[in-house]
Image (cartoon, rainbow over all chains, first blue to last red; front, side, top):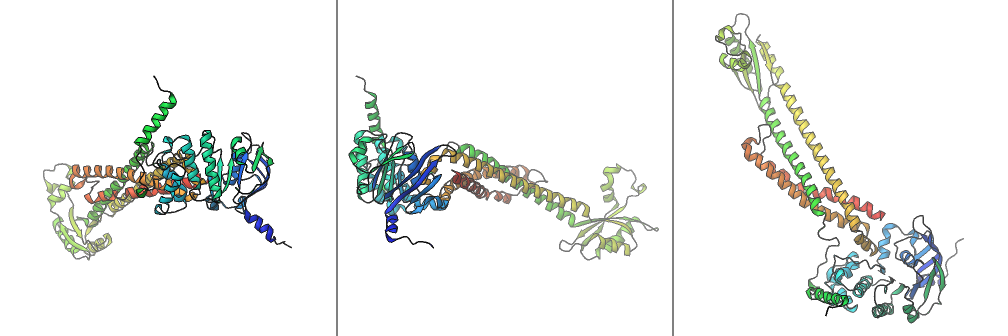
Length: 241
Length: 314
C-alpha cells in the first residue's frame, strides 16, 4: 500500500529549489570527483560553495545547471529528478537557471547588448519586448555606456558584470556563479558581491562557488565546504539573505 | 619620461571607448548568433560553385542531347524508303511508279514519290564510284515515302500494300535507327541524372564536412546557447540557415558560370549550338535558374542532419 506524502513533506519539497541525495559524479570512466553528497538549498537562500582547487565546486555547479548528470544518487531541481528528465525537456529547466561561468563564456563577436539579451532571444521573446529591460539591466551593472562594445574590448570587471547581466536577464529562479571574483580586484569583487546580494533580496536563490575566503567571511552566509569531492562541512542554515 | 605598461593599457582602453559608437537601443536589431562571415567561406563557396557549375552544365547538355535525339527521331519517324526491283519484263521506272501509286493509297502516307534513276544513283555513288553509262548498272529504283505526322503508316502496312500489287520491294521504315536513337537518348538522360545526383550527394557531403568543422570552430556558441536553454533544433537551425545561405550564393555563381558558357556555345554555334549533335537554345539557359535553390536545399538538409546529430552528442 502506497503511503501518501504528508502536507509538511510536500511543503518542504516545494520550498527546496535544489536537493542532492547521496550524489556521486565521475567524468567518463575516471575517478569520482564528487562522492555521496546530500544537501538541500531552500528557495530564496544564499549559499557559498567553498573548497580548494579540484575539490569539486565546478562539478557540483555543473550538476545543478544540467551540464552533467550524476553517476549515482538523485539530483532534484525545482522538484524534478534530473536523472529522469528527457533530453528535450532540459532547455525548459535551463531557462529557469542563470549561470555566471568561471570562464564567462561571452560571445566575442556579439556586442555587450547582444550578449546580455541572448537568453531572452532563445526564450523566443521579441526585441521590442526586452530592449528596454536589457538596457536598464546593463545600466544597473554599470555598463550603460558600453552596450555596443565587443567583449574583447571590455575590462575584466566589465566582462564579469556583463556575464552576470546575461545570467539574470531572464529573471532566473536560481543564480549560480563559479568563481565570480576570480579575475577581478578586491574592489570589483565587492561590487559584484553586492550585486548578488541585491538579486537575492529580489527573490533569486544564489549559489556562489568561490575560494575567496574574504568574501565568504564578510558575507556571513551558509557555506557548503567541499574536500576531495566530499561535503566536509555544511554550515548551519541561516535565514535567507 | 616613458609611461608604464599599465598606463599604456589604460590609454588604449580609453581610445577604444572613444572610438566606440554609442548603441541606439531603440534601433537595435539582434545580431546573428553565428558570425556573418567565416574564414572558410570562400573555399566552401568555390567548391560548391564548381559542383553547381558542373551540375548545370550536365543539365544543359542533357537538354541539348535530348533535343537532338528528338529531332532525329522526328525526322526518321516521318519518312520511309522503299527499294523496288523490276520483274517480269516490267521496266524499273514503271515498277517504281506503280509502287509509288500503291503506297500513296495507304492510310498514314502523306506522299509517295518515285525517285529518278539519277537521284538513286547519287545515293549509291559513294560506294560505287563514277559510272560512265548508267544503263549498264542495275541501280534499284527508290520510292521516297513521307508519312503522316500524327498517324504514320507502319512498315508492315507498306509491305502489305506492295505485296498486294505483286511488287518485289523492300521497305525501310528506319525503325532500326529510331530504336538506336531512342536508346542513346535514354542513356544520355539517365547518365545525366546519375551525374546530377552524384554532384548533389558530393555537395551534401561537402556541406556536412563544413558543418562539422563549423560546429567544432563554434563550440563556444553552441555551448552558451545550450546552457542558456536553446533546444538542439534551434542551434541546428542556425547552422542550417548559415550553410543554406552560403550554398545559395555558391549555386548562383555556379549557375551563372554555366549559363555564360551555354550562351557562348549558342553564340559560337549559331542555331545549332556547338554542333548539330548538341543544339542549345536560349531558353535552355533558364534551366540553371533553380540551381541556387536546389543547392540551398541540399545544403540545408545536409547541415541540419549533421548538426542535429553532433549537437546531441556534445
